[in-house]
Image 1 (cartoon, helix red, strand yellow):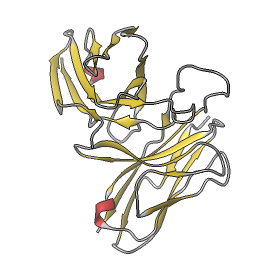
Image 2 (image 1 turned 135 degrees about the vertical axis):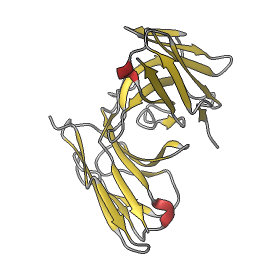
Image 3 (image 1 turned 180 degrees about the vertical axis):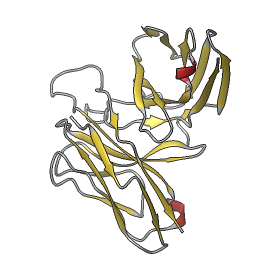
Length: 118
Length: 116
C-alpha cells in the first residue's frame, strides 16, 4: 500500500490564482480530511468527508473540495490569498462500523504540500 | 478559540531522562485523546491514545495520563532517546452521533529535543 499520497510537494502561487492540491489513499478508508499546519497554530481542520459523495466545510471561505470516489479528495484553492500560505496535510481513516461503540480508528497522514502564495 | 492547548512550545531533555509533554483542553464533549509525532517534511504519525473512561494508557516507553476533572493530559516518554526528537501534537475528538471521530482538534505542538 502507498498509504496517503499528496501532490505536489511544493508550489508557489500568485495571489488570485487557483490551484488543486491532490490527495489519494489506497486503504479503502471512509473518512478523509484536510488540515493546514501553521507555526504556533498546530493543525487546523479545513474540510472533512465521512464518505464518497459527502463533504463538510470547517472554515468559511477560500477552499473547495469534492469526494467523487473513496480514494481521492482534492482540495481546490479558488482564488489564492497570502493568508493561505501554509503546509496542507491530508488524512484518512476507517469509518467507525455502524452499531459498534468504541475507539476511533487511527488517522493516517500524507507527507504534506508546502504552498506559498505571493 | 483554541480548544486544545499545548502551552510549552519546546522541551529539551537529556537522553535517558523522562520527557513530559502537557496538553489542556476546554471542550467537555471530547471523549478520546491522541498523541501524534511529526518529523520535518513528513506527515504526523499516531503514537498513543486514551479514552475518557480511562486515566492511563501505556505502550512501551510511552504513557499517556488523563485527568478529566482538570481537563489535562500528559505524555511521558521514559527513557527518552535522541530519535524521539520531533514535534508532538496532542489531539482530541468527540463521538457526536457516531460520525465525528474522523475530525481531530489539535494543539499547537511541542518541539521535543533529546540531547545525547
